[in-house]
Image (cartoon, rainbow, N blue to C red):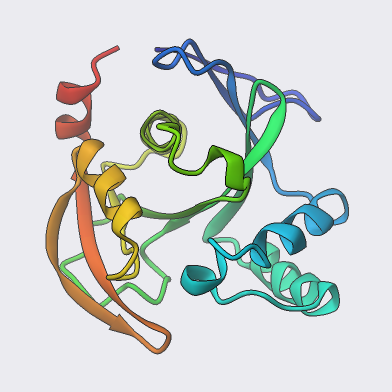
Length: 196
């Protein structure tokens, strides 16, 4: 997998070309004015609602994402495949997040949440290569040494992708809206599985 970083305004933050034959993966910052309509559509999709519980009006989502964007310990991303937006991702530092205190945190721990919004992409084998690109971005560009994932205990597909990426299950944790599986991915483990 060949990763390239572009930092010019309006371009992808990070792009990966030739990832297991699925095409060009690009990540860009979420733009509330440009992307709200898309996120409103995705959050109201049947495959998304049970795990995100964000099937709200555009006005409510605008307020939610405005607050999210003001929180400097996280970054909101849109991921495209061959120019088509298909994935929403939140990457965050575990320090200062609600997950702090739920496990033995280390200083360079980062976490992520991801949803494949486009239904025709779900279950087609894109999850692992997309996840791999996100992990590379977090390790290479955000300085993560470990990555935390905490999918809902019923999100079987998410857990399977995490395991394919090298995450190890640690224990269950509880949030007001879900019981989650805590997975941790060590940088060394990831690069043994996916060397450059």
